[in-house]
Length: 434
Ligand code: URA
Image (tube, rainbow, N blue to C red; front, side, top):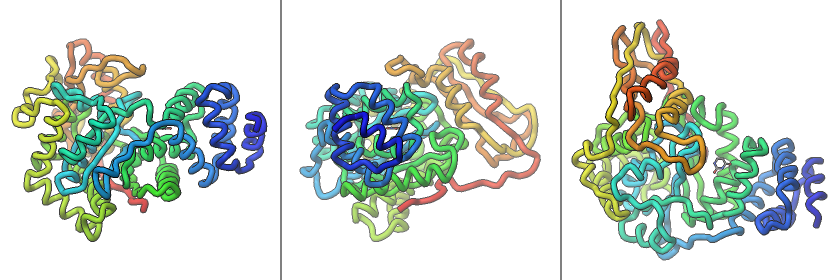
């Protein structure tokens, strides 16, 4: 085989065979096929697309480039959850403990925040002592002991994806549904779970800006799952405004704890219950998703989810004292409030603007590996649809310095849009793709 022929074939829109794709991926991973040829091939994929069979073949080739975690010793079903990334998305910290407390083990590998969206690993590292780097043996032991583990993505899972993603990032080839779907699913398949719920975010603060694109991505990932024997369900959830009230690492951990104590924002609860109910249903733990919703609520109200969160934190070396005394989480020295100069109904809180401001204040990073400040961020005081009077509090800024707060105040103000007429609210969960 010659790389140039596969590039030309894709340029002409011919469907490549699984063998051809596998040859290309393994040649790239071993260094035998140079970046420039793979870049040309990626651009042809962006322009021509891939069939479902090709997308599945690419996923399998990327899985085969590294280790595959074997979770079969844990039991018949281990669940996983993945979000395509959003602002204020602390859902894992709520879904994981509730599903595990309801009896379905959850083993999840997560990433750090990059760009204006946050990452679960950064949030967990706000907890004193919490370990996110676990060996495969520790990962499996943690699921067996507690029923829940969340650890950093290890580089030996689907390493071809890591290399391809780095190349896509600098060759304008990230924006392709088959490439995104296979990239996400290769890591999910390699991480060894039996069923995964996907939270595909759609809106200003998400990768996918339209329902059509989000649906196509969800369907592509579901089809990959089917072809490799991994159960997949996807929900499409709104990301025009941030999820919940809090944006920023420790602030989001605090909100997750409040949610597990029964005092969570309705949009976060809706997304978490829907994802969790689908996992319980896939595991065969409940007879229907509706019944799963009931179990999720009961598990939250009984305090079992909070108890599971405590065990999870302790098991990964974290000091659980903050769960009873939230002041023990990192707190920023400067707090500033923004109030409204107008009256009306809150029509929009632009998640992308808020996400970018959170990076500027130090909660996120623009360059891989940069340090972040776990304490800083924002707490929204109004959500879309709320009535706002002149002087009402819109958001509290948590900053490390007065200057840091000054720098983001005006861009943050621009995120809030008022309307004179009442605003129609849409549900947080927009669609379920089964
Ligand atoms: N997240 C991934 O893991 N891969 C992509 O291609 C895009 C988002």
